[in-house]
Amino acid sequence: MSDTARTPFSDPNDLPAPGDAPPRLSRRLVLGAAAAAGAAPLVAPGSAAGHAAVSAAAHAPAKAAAPTPPGPPQLIDPAFELSPPERPLAPWERRPLPGADARRLAPKAASRPDDSAAPSSRLAASSLPFTFAVHDFPVREVPLELWPYYRTRAVPVTDTGTHDSAGVRMSLRNGRLYNHPVAQAQYGLALLESYRITGNTVFLDRARQHGQRLWDTRVVRSNAWFYPYPFSFQLHGTAEVYNPPWYSMMAQGQVLSFFTRLQAVTGNANWATAAHNTFNSFKLGPAVRQPWGVYVVGGRLVLEEYPDPTRIHGDVTYNGHNFAAYGLHDYWSWTKNADALLLLQGAMTTTRDWSGSYRISGFRSKYCLTHATDSGHYHDIHIDQFAHLYAITGDAVFARTIDTYYNDSPPSAVAGTVRLAAGGHTGCKFDSKGRVTSTKLLRLNSPSSAPSTYREKIWSQPGLWYSISAGGLSGYKVQEKPPTRYQLGRFAGVSYLVNRSARIAYNAPKAYVVDAAGSSTSEVTTYRAGDTVLIDSRAALNASQHVRLADGPYVGKWLPLPAITFS
Image 1: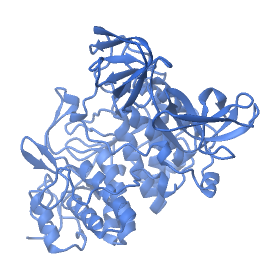
Image 2: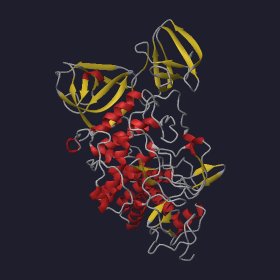
Image 3: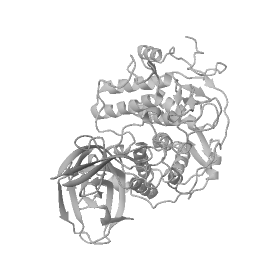
């Protein structure tokens, strides 16, 4: 193989990047990974020359909170999206923050949307080709337990996911395996966590394999590495089709997190080089028919999950933007790079300022702004992402946004047992517009219960609804109405990750402990109205909203939500 071998989809007129050598892994591993990728192993891939420094490309979203539209938005189909990582731990699986971390990460006052300014001196001193609004968020390193992608359990040693003969995660489409950079980066992060948990070097070796595959399939533009999608992609199942190669800043951000952590674990300078070159992709402006993904929309920095490969246009996808920002935080935590900090603060400014534009009051948030699609379970991911940004900054605006989105539509993937009181219960079926298409009445002479697979908002219908999966109302939805119909136990939990300050609203509120079966115990507290307490989570306990105490004599116990007011 000559020194002019190049990555798939690179410009044949490009020259090889000088000094561009792969990590020092075994020849067997390099050959196996490259062969599985459908390309010869690389020695010095080409670099795409030149780029356009474009700073604005689309209309800004409305600044005000989005009103409820007259009809339901189309529900996002996860089959047409880049898969997000697993949901984080439930609050009852998390231990309280140690005292030193709790004090260091104490919350700050809330900033306000649009309370930002472009720091011209910092932008002028940077190498960024963008001008964008930036709020000067405090940015902190966070302990391991608060990292995005943190795990407490290792993945199985035998991988049950779709992978090739080299053991690298792939995407199976129409009977053919394709590289999938998000899947490879996410699994690589999970492998590093599994190695940390177990010490089993099988996980570390497999993480290196995934790093090597990403290295081998990279496309170089200027001094930046991009990770292509080599298959056609139907955006949200619409008529918009992205033909390969296309790119994604969600992939860039998760690969950046992966390489940053891989170099920390291994001490291998080649992985550090990979992280630096991946970060460079955040510093390039958009360019037609070249790898790109960062642009400015309405004065706000956007890390685009779905940049159009044929024009300067994107989907303005919320979750992908935020996942990309995680990569910037990982990289900044390691390097303290000033451009990484500026980009991270700009990305978080966008998340804060546009939370109202993605919001649908009383319902799930939008997946993106271009199509205004119903985010479905991605709404829960938006809530989790606000928690990570709250941990990173301490800015209470993100904690308040958690509550706003939670009150609009709490986490829905909460299977459990629904208690049904004696009497009548009406099950309903709905069409996509929330209109009732069928009903069924069940009469009970004594209390009973039924399993539920989901608890959700229904468009144009009041309250929350359980999807009953067995018994007389199987296949129907019933409306939550405590104490007549409610799910037992604790569920729909969200951790704020770092503590929030609150005041007790009335004297001697009761503190509760509720187990998974719904059995509860309580005690009258000695709190007086006006006392200050720290809160770390919120959840439904027997379908009633509660918050968890993070310190003091009742730490770990739950107060009814009306018993406190957040500072």
